[in-house]
Length: 283
Image 1: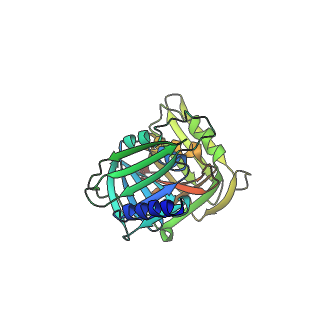
Image 2: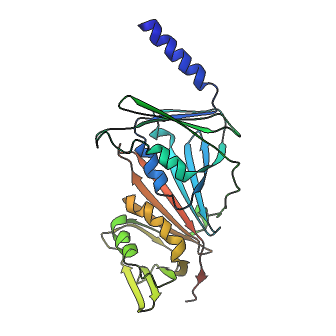
């Protein structure tokens, strides 16, 4: 039995050796949850590095979502290059990851192994649940050049970290007849304010800096910017899964929403959402 096991492990190692990327984990939901948080377009660009995977989805060159799945999430993670990149159909990828559909009951986990051999090669998924094995081969495409929002910490003017639950209420109650969401961040009152301007008039939701919902408040100047609600709506998927949110604006009024999401295994992952301002409002 020992020699047979040794032969199998040697054979598996030889098979894995043909791939530039091999990533495996016991619970595929830890990956599918993160991908669902950025699934608002059919295609995504996957970047793999020794740090883990970054999955980027863009909309109209004005908004970008990045899901970060750290190397620590996987029990096996091997990459032979500094960075690999490919474009993939995110809708199909999610269908494959949820192929078992939890049919074996809520306690069942689907284990996942992902393999990629390099440029022009498919992404191979090997899924197993309760002894049932399924292999999927997904076509990969040459990655598009993704937008660089040039959002660096040196240019951040205002930053607020909050519990997500209060933002969920704000977004759930947005006036859908308003085309824009106005965000005011200021070292002075009203500190943080969300406003819409719809058919029934304007609405305002404010949070004082000493609110129990606000965990960190670092605002250096008053900024009022408007963002298209149609561009912000996709980020609600990540908001719904998150426990904390970091709201940052830079000197150009670009918005960064960083969502902290806890996986079923208790690991921390992040989704970051960038949005360009629709217009700047003069004070």
